[in-house]
Each structure stands twice: as C-alpha cells, then as structure tokens.
Length: 106
Image (cartoon, rainbow, N blue to C red; front, side):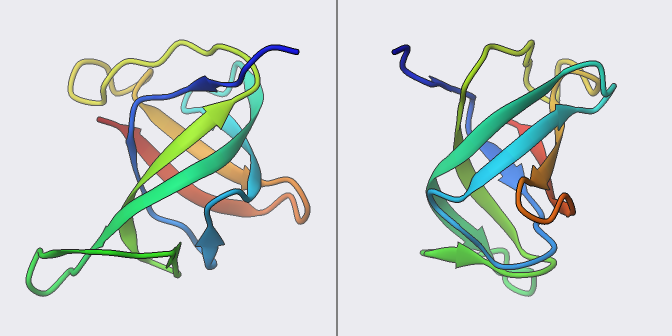
C-alpha cells in the first residue's frame, strides 16, 4: 500500500468545524481532478483582529488557519503566488458532500 502524498502546507477557510484526521475530497480550482485527502495536522489559526497565530485543534466557520493534507493520489500543485489555478483547492466533506473550505498552497 502506497503512502499518501503530502501537499504543501495550506491556508484553509472551512465552513464548519474541522479536525485533524477528518477525510475530505479535494478539487483543484479548475475542477479537472478530484482526489481524496485527509487533514493530518492543523498548525494554527489566525486571529483576524490582531493577526496573531494561535494554536488550534479545530477550525470553525470563517476561520483562517494553516493545515497539512495527505492525498491518496498526486495532483499538480504550485504555490498560490506562482499559479492561482494550481495553488487553490476546494475542500469537500466526503460524508455530506458540502464545501468544507478553501485552501491556498503556500
């Protein structure tokens, strides 16, 4: 069994609380490929008022944070600063099929 590939760390804005280890499906911004992924780590969340980074175990609605994803298959990813098309992802919850967040590759 192959080890899941890890994407570059991303900044995500989820719509509902998200925890590390939760399974997701990811879609690239241009929607040509869908790949299952899992959040392996939530690095921190960003306080919108002070721009201070704070430790977090989950991210709530409209929260900006840094997360790490493990994918089941490779996808073309560049940092968002290099390519807006290849540096943006849509995260979809596999259970509800609702948007769980958006991510930018850093």
